[in-house]
Length: 268
Length: 268
Image (cartoon, rainbow over all chains, first blue to last red; front, top):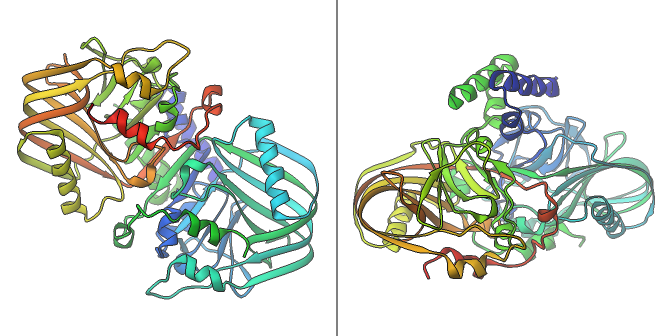
C-alpha cells in the first residue's frame, strides 16, 4: 500500500511537472533515512522523536532503537519489531517512537543464494565487505543487507529501557543482557556506513537479528552462519533528520566519541 | 511555479494517504539538499553530476560550484548565478551541472533589519553566530542566511575552470583570482554547518557574494558591511546525494582533509 502510494506520488509528480528529475530528486525513495545522530544517542538523547508510522513511510528495512532506549529495532518487510532486554520480541505499532534509526526501502541491487560457513561475525562482515567491493569497487556509499539463514549459534544483546536522567550509552552497554541461541533460522538486517559519517552513524557494519519465528532478536554480537541467502541495497543518498527537541539542542556534538562508540557496538 | 508544484504534491500526498506525516517525512522541503562531499571536491572530483534544473527543484537559495570547478555558485531567489574567475557573472541554465552544492528553500525563521557596522568577515561570522545562539540556543543544525546590504568593501575570489587530470583543490586555491570591490550593494548567501559534518561539508560559516546588479560575485574572503538586513533559515534535515560516478567511487574518503579544507576556505 505504501509503495503504491509512493509510486503514485512519483507518477503524479512526473505527470504534473513533466520532469523525471523532480521525482528522482525530491521524492527519492532509495535513500537511507536516518533519525538523529549516533553521537546524540551516545550522550543519552533517548527520547523518541519520529513515530514508527512515519518511519514505515520512508522504509521497509532497517535498524534502530526505541523511546527510552527500550530494545533493539529490527524493521523487516515493512514490519517493526522490538527485541527487548528480557529476550522477548514484539511488533511495534505506529505510535511508538524512535530516538535513532536508519531505514530504507530495500532494493535488490546485489543478491546471493549460496552463503555458507561463516562461523563468526568477523567472517560475516568480511564476506559482506568482499561482496560490496567485488560488486561496486568501493565502500563510499551506504549498504543495507538482509541475510536469511540457518545458524549454529547467534549471540545477541538488547538494551534495557532507561529512566531519566538518562545515562550515556557507554555506561549502559556494560550491563546489557546477552542471549546465545543455538540451532535456529532467522534474518540479519545489516547496515554499512562509510567512514565519513563518523559521529553521524557507525562506520562499518552494524547488525541486528530476528529469528524466523519472530520470538528472538537483538543487536548481533556474534554468529555462526551455516547457510543463507542475501539481498543488498547500495544506497547513495542519506536523508538525515535531526530532532527538533531541547535535549538535542543541548548536546555538545563536537566531542569525539568514536572510541566509546566502537566499544558500545562491538563484542564485549 | 516549483513551490506550487511542491505544495500540490504535498497536498496530494495528504489527500491520498490521509497522513500529514508522510508529507513531512518524504516530501520535506525544508531540508538542506547537498550534492557530493567536500572531501570529494577537495580531492578533485569536479565533474558535474546534478543539473541546475534539478537543484532548482529542491531549493531556491544556496552555494556551490560548477562542472570543472568553473566558478562559484550563488543561488538566490530561485536563480543560479556563476561568478567566474574573470570577474564576470552569468545566469546558469537548467542543463549546467554541479559537482558540489548545498541549497534549500529559504524560510524566514529569523529576520533582522538593522545590521550595521560589521567591518570584517570575522565580525560578520561572529554576528551570525551570536544571532543563531540567541534565537535557537545551540549550533547543532544547518543555517542558511541571506544578507542584503551596503558594503564599503567586498573581497571575493573565484575558481578558474579546470581541465583533466584535475588537481586537488588545495593546489588550485593558491592561484585563484581575487577581486576587491568598493562601495557597492549586494547580497551574501551564507551556509553554516555543524562540526559533525566534517568531511561532508565545511563546519562553520561559508559565504558567497553577488552584487545587487548581478555583475560581480564570488567566494567571500572579507567584507566591510555598512548596513543591511537578514533572513535566516534554521534547518534540521540534510538530504545528501552522493554521485553515482566512477570518479566518486575511486576516491579515498577516509583521509582527514580538515586542515586542507580550512586553508582553502579561509582568507589567504
